[in-house]
Image (tube, rainbow, N blue to C red; front, side, top):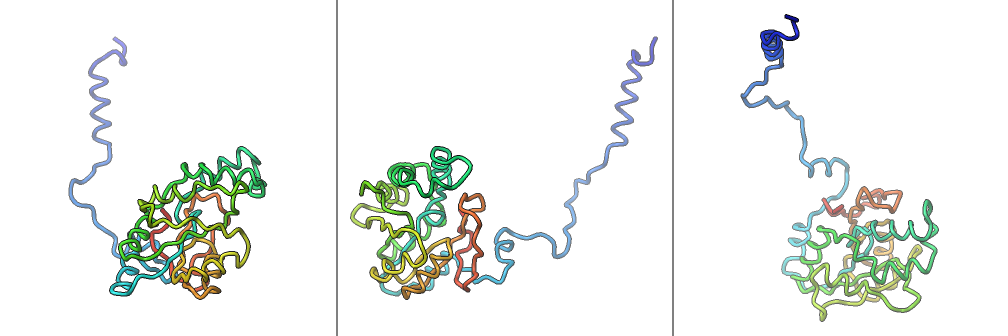
Length: 239
């Protein structure tokens, strides 16, 4: 009988594989002193003035209601899905779609249904609504040429804001200093945004610009250097 046809051969082979397999201890593995980090610790490794939603709430406790402002793209929403769709439709492979009025008409009139509301923004808006603060939404997007926009009801829906508390979205347009007058005229004390101009425009208007982290997979590149102006940065606000 051939060796390969003998049952004893396979039994012997299996036994040898079992004996040579690495042994794993059932006991608790030893930890390495000083090794490992929580996600919060990883986010805190740079010299950045981190602040949490809970710390903002504690800071504002027992203080009267005030006015606060929010940027939209990458601050309220992870809006890359809507922008990516626009790029594929109007200018595949480049960013010319951002200069196309037809894109802005579409994105602000329905495509934000595909944008993802950020949980960090939901927490911040809940904090300010619970305090009775007046909330304003100021975006660098141009106003759609039709004069009509669907962003206001979309924000109200995604962030559970009653109609009587929802202020219409303010379209400031792009450019350095574009948001200054709107932030100043609405007496905004805190303005949340992911971009550098959100911080600098807020300061120019006499408000505090608080940085919100732009998601790593945002199509809006390059990513900003959070804390570059010494501003406070909301921890874990990239989602």
